[in-house]
Length: 134
Image 1 (tube, rainbow, N blue to C red):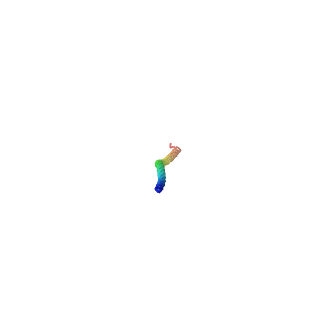
Image 2 (cartoon, rainbow, N blue to C red):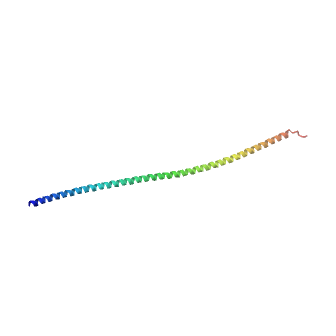
Image 3 (cartoon, rainbow, N blue to C red):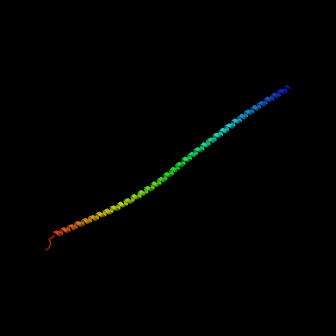
């Protein structure tokens, strides 16, 4: 009977030790699961932040692209204005050259008329100075 009692006590102790090992294994497993859960949550958070940062970079790049397109359109419009102004300057230069030619021709005509008037005046003086036949 004593042997049976000792065996029962040994069996109880072994059972308690096994239960303690099971509880310790469960605690370790729970801690490991919690660490994995936290690591996964941190990874998800990093991925979310990374996506947000990428979206921000994409938005900024799109804004720069839109600004560059607007700048290109403005530059094209300015180029058209410059070309139109250059064409106007060219027309004005041609008109000025034509006016200069007309002015030169008018001066030449005026000189010719002045010479004709001077010659007519001299002829008239000669005619009035000549003795009149009586």
